[in-house]
Image (cartoon, rainbow over all chains, first blue to last red; front, top):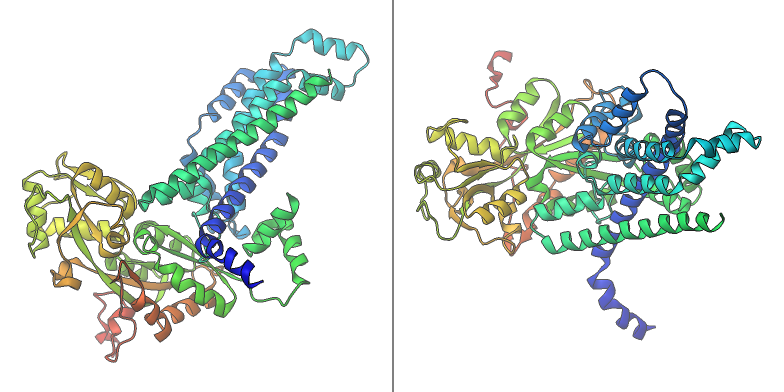
Length: 238
Length: 309
């Protein structure tokens, strides 16, 4: 036991703060961005299907609005969400300012147009005769939607990835609504990889900033690999 | 994933704000051990205090004693005060007396205390193109920088440091808008401005604390010292702390805010501030506890108490 301690102690003494710091930042980043992207996906795909299938007045206008939303500046979204959740805003009584939940809200607003827009393009490109065939074979509207999603799955996977990329890499809105908070023991509360990079660069600790940047890139790569793999699996079922 | 998320939510001590999921998670934890208050204090402060690392030293013993969490948000002084104005923070620690006074007069800030001071220093490239090194007049030094059109990087973010910088420029006869291309507004925190000044081989005004905490990351040198090292009084940098008025914003955690102010202006808090060093140098000088009464700290500077006699 003493031997074990003496072997372990240098590691424990050297790294506890840093490791806890980095791990908690990764956890907050993933929690916020994945939740935001899942919610955006649940919202966006039905919208994309509806807009893609139906012909109605103002469809072109709605599509342009969605496409404009894809390029919405994140600081503006952050500002709007801050005013919404601020104590004096409409959701003030929910006490959401400087919480991860507020960050999820702003990333939802950022990711939803991207996922909707790209999914819409994918859904629209599924040929009419595929949908007709599904309908002719006795499919209900839900079946037709499922067939369309299956046909457009690569496009939809791309949409989700693009949304995730937008969410996890943006710094403007989470900095404003989250406040970049870490506890006195170095545990992140609302500090994400991007806001931590910003802070470390501000304090001139470029090495830590670079490490966090590398972690961010690796995380995005892993998430991409997982989503592409999921897309590939459904391809095998065909 | 769901377990991680629950741990996470519980760990940050999310209040009812977390929504139903958060409540369920907190409820689960309640059975495992004695429930401590678990409240969260939101402190908004300036980047210059935050970047020195002092607040972690102060907050840890406070959190231990009261079983609470301090969420520290670092912004410029202007933004920190605005956050208090909208009731989004409970306690505010800043360093721009003129802005603090205005905030007190507006009724948002109460129970202001002088907390500590350090000083500003004029730092710049080691080559010193404007030839200001060793001077003991900050106003003259600024004038020389302007005359030689040496690069000057301003915070440009309505922070306490920016406020002080504009005051010195005013003394030197320059108003906002008189500056040429040599004057760059960064609109960023102190650390970023120091980095940027190093890159552009220029000058800037920095609080001593942030400069010392970055001394290993920058080649900039002190050219004009502040009052801590015998420099001019115009470079002094006092910090104040106050609670947000619960009569204006009834949602603020006023009790905890006062407990925090009480703690960091206590003998123990003062001791932590006094003993906090970076690179062997003391960064902040506590001034909350003095034998002589200092009534001025509670009221705006121009306040005349005589009419209440």
